[in-house]
Length: 583
Image (tube, rainbow, N blue to C red):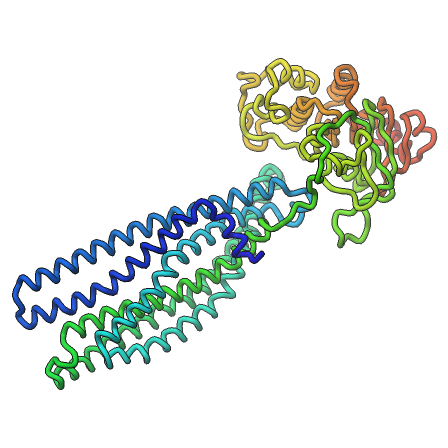
């Protein structure tokens, strides 16, 4: 499907306002080109000293035509605004819903800043282009055609001036528009960089201030902003030539009509052409030339919007790489997990697999620890369980079924993941926790908070569970944020609970209390704990040691100390020869 067709699918309920806009625009243009014809008759009646009643009658017709034209213009503007604003609202909604369906693989294709630009700047460009298309892009050609026809009907040979002026103006306007286009096109990609700079700076404000890098960030933003300014200035400088070219053609047209028309009046003594016709011809000349000017601006606007249309269509046309099966399984019976000959790479273009030939069995209710160095693919391994990514080869099974057989919602409802980057939404603590279960009772919320060792600090806030969390959770500490995220995950009552280094910001005592609570209150839930500290996983039923995308070893704490050098080295660094985690 072409990008334009993709965009127009979002029109839906705003097709009617679009059609009404076109109808009223046509009426407005017809009446506007009729008025100079009526005006010419009135001028001639006054010149010929016709009876006042006849002049008044023509004047009333002209006023009626003007009022009808005004009414058509108002209605066209109203329906045009509804149609264009409605289209923009639908596009934003469709894009947002599409992004919600994206897998991590899809999101990796688009940067966050690029998606923001597409939903704001690009949608605004499309809205303006659509408004101009259904109003001005219809009005200008109609005005041009009707005015040309009426000028030949009224002026005869005098209308030949347009045969000279119109081609010159068309050539000049097209040349100007084509020269301006490359600069306009380059702007949109630079908007992405500008938004990326703003996003990174706001998100990392504490880091920026901590390293006193405000000047550096300001310079980076200024450079991105200045690049856009230069491109827009260059484009606008070229477009500015439209005005003098337009003025030149208008004045040439007026001088030609007045000079030639006056001679014709004198020679024919008003038989071939009269004063009223000259007045009408000047008006038609203005309408013809202004309509050409509007067409050139439409050309510029539509060419600019083509880039935005393509960028929006890319998002709307993007098919989620992870889809629902034709006949999905809707219930996850238990928390057992099997990896069978699993290999995975993030992209088909990637040179190496992130995971290679992984085979693993985890019984339901087990507590499993995962250790490994940075880049050993610990997080990659657990992201395959709830289908945040799909395996490249092999299969991942939950409760004995391939995860690709489940519906996404029942699978992800059964698997709670607390990722490395904890995100708390703006709102109350209670509202954040209820993300895990929107129907949770107060008792269930408190129980989950106690299990996550969060209840005590929540009650220290003046409003308890109704205390407000600022955007991004900036008014709570890292450890508090982690515990809130764990409580939120527990409220789902999952069959599988995955903690991806989610207790790194809490002390070892709190970490131990959280794990003890899991063992006591959710014994049937499979618990997978990715950690940097051996102390966080040494009591696990099974510990997995990852190394370079492979499973280097599995076993209990005691078994791995005897049989695996990687685990033994990590343990000794943290407890004997190395810097301990508590220092």
